[in-house]
Amino acid sequence: MRFIHTADWHLGKLFGQRHMTEDQAYVLEELLALCKDVHPDALIIAGDVYDKTVPTIEAIELLDDFIFEISKREISAFIISGNHDSAERLSFGAKVMKFGKIYISPVFDGKISKYTLSDENGKINFYLMPFLKPMNVKKFFLDEEINSYDDAAKLIVKNMNIDVSQRNILIAHQ
Image (cartoon, rainbow, N blue to C red; front, side, top):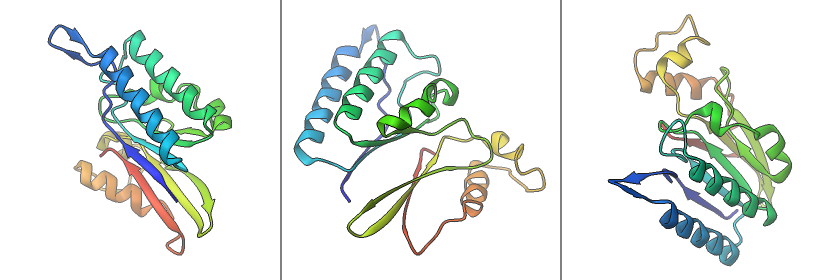
């Protein structure tokens, strides 16, 4: 299976007094061109899609245009929130986007989303773990001791019921 892994787009970034929108649009066009050349089965966007939890209109439009173009190419895309993103805002419309093979991690509800693709070598599972603060994990595992980000991530992975006989990819921004 061929996939492209990206992260830390920081759409909407302001560098000093300069908006990066044109530069970011150019980079996304180049990414679309790369996808056209290499024909990946999947695109991974591993967090910090936006630069702020409340993204600018321009940043939202950039992502919207990009997602539309990826879905037209029938490339499966896996997107998770990072520490700069708002999981609630990023996952808006995620249920309907699944029809276009765009999979966005939902707001954490105690479980990690899993999506499965297949190729000539069998199944490959993609686990989407959004950025998690220990306090967000603790409310679903009240009997567990969680004192750090590492504790939280280890506990989540331990509870994922991963089938080790298959290929598995954990997408995280932790």
